[in-house]
Length: 162
Image 1: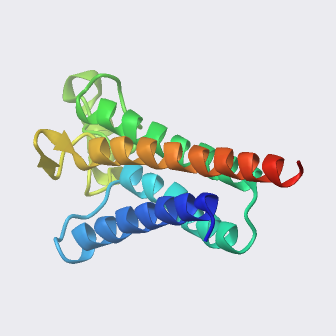
Image 2: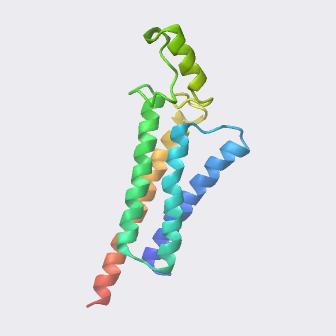
């Protein structure tokens, strides 16, 4: 296995591990995901598929696209952390309503239409960092691994052509 394939395999395995962890928290730990948590899973699913394809057909552009996809996932996670910390408002569909800003009827409609799991509530944290925070950190590292795989692929193809 070439270096670029090894890096892509590690990045794909990292995304797979994050997905397994998310599902374990959900199905074993009983922590239902919010809307933003679910959005953070998609880039990792794409990265796992990209890693499998990359192992068969290494391509620096595939690695760069995978890096971008995982970086977008990190961005969603950073956004989620901001919602959890009240740095900025989250989607109105998954944050606790401000009771003073609406009528009683609007408040009741908001409550009835709000998902059970709110995006602005931290369900679990380790060392003061929420799951979204850990996902942001680890996703950023995985994006760097994908970039390294793409760079290694570019170096391998340039040395092969010489």
